[in-house]
Amino acid sequence: MKRRLVLLLTAALAACAVLPDRRASLTPLIGATEAELVQRMGVPSRTIETGGIKFLAYTELHVDVVPGMAPFPAWGPYSYGYYGGYGGFPPEVIHRNCETTFELVGGRVRSFTLRGNDCS
Image (cartoon, rainbow, N blue to C red):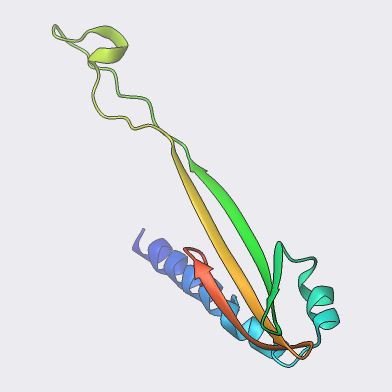
């Protein structure tokens, strides 16, 4: 049992090491043209231009549902059927998002910012 836990933890850490960091994967886009950015990232969710600076925003949304669990039935003289049990919890919905905004000056990417709870 202990060996399985060690193998599972090792595999989880290895998976984390293989996944690229979002900042590291987007840094090579600095200096790219607007056409190259759209070719790599796709059509932006929002675009605005102000003061000669253009901003292109890309939004990623993920919804995860953690299933709930029905209460355990209570057996004995004081149980009241399904509702007489104990424990259990409702399903949980988790919303994850990350918005990446690129700043373009002179038609080239100057910088980017990340905002959201799933930008790592």
